[in-house]
Image (cartoon, rainbow, N blue to C red; front, side, top):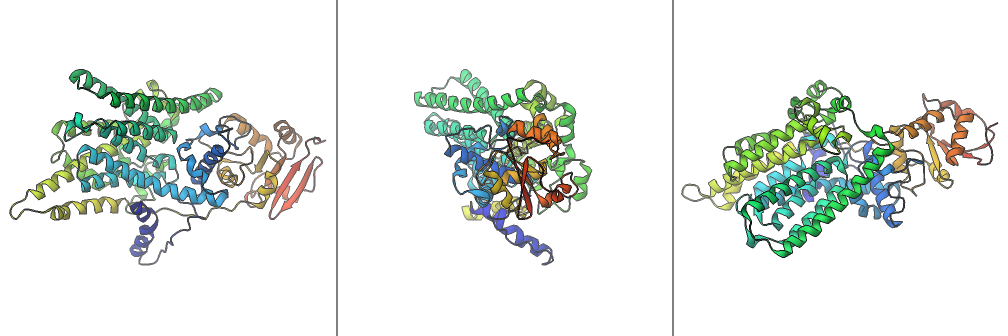
Length: 562
């Protein structure tokens, strides 16, 4: 946790200051009033966590419908739900609470990613420094900063932690193989619970995890059928109950997302749309802008990637590439294990290339769920994991060689003089240059309008509605506004007709929906159809209230526009 705070929050401002000789000063941000990343998706994700906590306090009533996206049902399933973070949503309230909570979770996501990688490699047989190298590579890979606005994609620690727990519970490691005396049923059961929690965050990275875990279970079952080792009853019971919990949680979320697809068939992404987000092999060498080490140097390379470069930058780390490559030849792992890891890394890369690779179409056509994903580049997580394991095998081997060195023998401390710099190198390459913009304050007009919900905030588009979602954490009023990766036809239709507000069709639509309050944001109307409204006097059927710089229109539910 201390490392995550230092890497994400404390060290980068001082590195920037030193690199620019003080020409660029980046103050340490205020975690209660600035949000890490940008003012786009992070504001909506802060709302998601807050909504999960709000739903918990109300017995999960209306969980999937949410206070936003009214009157569309299942609005929560238009995004990764982040429901696993709902307990954090119980802490604090309002916009400040939502922002502070999000910033804390953002840092904790990196801490958990490091911990999960470290635990997995320790279980596989790596030494402490080697496991830390793998944890650093998984938590601070440069490609991850292309998703600095996607907490759902950065939350990968549960994957490696669950794999570590399951391996420990089943007495499995790379160096010792299967050992019946090392079986720990409690760890196996806990691993299933952590896996279920990971899925509850969403299918952005959880979908691939479900299938990888299913494949590992199939491989393990096949190995058991061949060798028939004796299994303890407690382990079998733990696996059955834990597996049922994992399956139930996965099925619960799959049903919600399937239901949204039935309501909105266009949620399925066509092949050309996936191609728009698909990376090329060049992306493996390109870092996002928010990489402190490579961001500025790779500006031209990112431009060459085309549109949406944040989904096409796949740099796992040059240091990691070198360590993993060397780990193919010098390693604590067996030659067969190294070949399997190389195979996994290659297959993972080919899948991450999406339409620019030869095999992603198989997932798209035949594996349920992938035809709803538009961003195959996020599968780079799995090659990163394979490369991290290869690198840890090398570092473990180097430490063992050092300790077996010529006279006088190297001590453990001396061995670390050889391996710790490799850890520092991976961490240094993984430093970010993240933005911490000031979060927009909630308009006072929102508070007045919320007393007469449902409400609508104008102008309404995906950019503005991201902020409206954050503001709605103060009381969670029912509202039409909402932003997601998919805009339902109903919501777009409301936006279109409301561009004519306060025309008769617009008022008719408000009456149909039961909308009682409309908020007009003065600082957002420039160049929109709503700008003339600021100077229009009262309209029959509408009561105007000027609240600070903004306007609240209270709709008379008994009167229509003549």
